[in-house]
Amino acid sequence: MSLLMLLPAHGWAQDTLFTADVQLMTRGEMRHGGMSLEAENAQSEDKSAFILDRERLTLDYRRNWLEARASVQHVGTWGHEGAAGTSVYEAWGRLTTPGGLFAQVGRLALRYDDERIIGSDDWVMAAMTHDALRVGYEGGGHKAHALLAYNQNMSALNSPGSYYTAGSRPYKTMHTVWYHYDVPKVPLGVSLLLMNIGMQAGTVGGVDDNAPHTEWQLVYGGYARFAPRPFSFEGSYYRQAGHDEYMAKLDAWMASIKAEWNAAGNCSLQAGFDYLSGDDYVAVVNKGGLGMPRHEVNKGFNPVYGSHHKFYGAMDFFYLSTYVNGFTPGLQNAYVGATYRPMKNLSLKASYHYLATGTKLDDLNRTLGHEIELEAAYALARDVRVAGGYSYMTGTETMERLKRASNDGRLRWAWLSVVIAPRLFSAKW
Image (cartoon, rainbow, N blue to C red; front, top):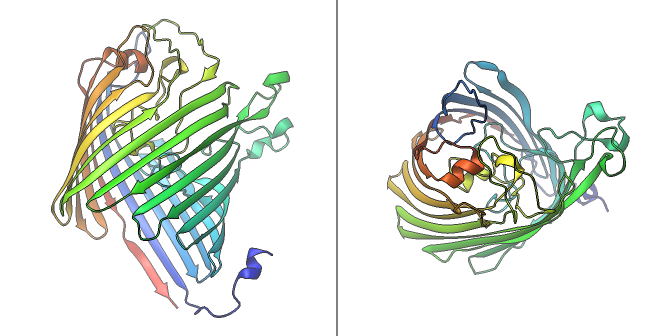
């Protein structure tokens, strides 16, 4: 029986809602230290300042069992037309039955659990979406979703092996099953996730093992959140198996735990720890030297399509940029923080991160650095928000060698953003 046959012919009031929303985001950033300077005769300094912007228009249509959304965005850097781009952010349709079954198809912004493995990563101006089919059921405390995504280059329609060169969707195919259950009368929610990701391997014209083919990697695990007021606890555990796109065997894992105490109505304290596994051997060489892989198994966990900026320190040194020689020594992230709301529209945050590699290095200490983060956000109006932050990190020799970062002990980053997000139009008939 098809989903369309389950849709009601009558019984629902035929109300139609149409909305048009716009989001104007501008963010300026200043950075000093922490980025790679590999060139021997580099005529630059390890610092920069730039302003990013994003303009997004979203149209949404709802009529009982039917919902459709189209969202177009423009992303750019002030004064640099070559870095700008206009694209379709979301474009999908969704059918829902009274019993809780649904089907959704198109370009989707996916967010699951704490967004550690699958998230929209909205901090990144372009954000992340997936061209996919999603079907599932939601009701009675249960949520079960199944996703199917497949990507192809228009220029590769006639290529042997259906060769796919990664673009904005960094995989060839992806199958995902997610299940969530909210326990009745208990502030406990539990999720299970299973992802089967097909990555393009080989090259056009290659033969034998290097012929175009798909390598499969499996990501599986779970997430739980328990929130007895005034406390909340959450944790996750995931494993990674199969092979990466370079045909290396995968055997990696990660775990996280976080606790929060709402000490008063306007103050809360947080503490947590993240561990992401790394390769057994990491070649850490001096600048200009060469490091050759010695491992046959990739043990560095990759949090694939998560909202990485939410975790591992706001300066984004980890899992948004690579280590030298392609090695992954993993990561330990121990942190504490506090949030204070002195008035209704103002939020102040402060946190400290101790960052270290997940695996032992031959001739270096595991410690990467200590990072302090300050952030403030103020709502000028219902649809206007101003926020800013400052981060300071004392890097170590390990940080310098692994990331080719400057080691002056003064890695700094500051940002200021303005978000204007009004609803332009709303109609109901």
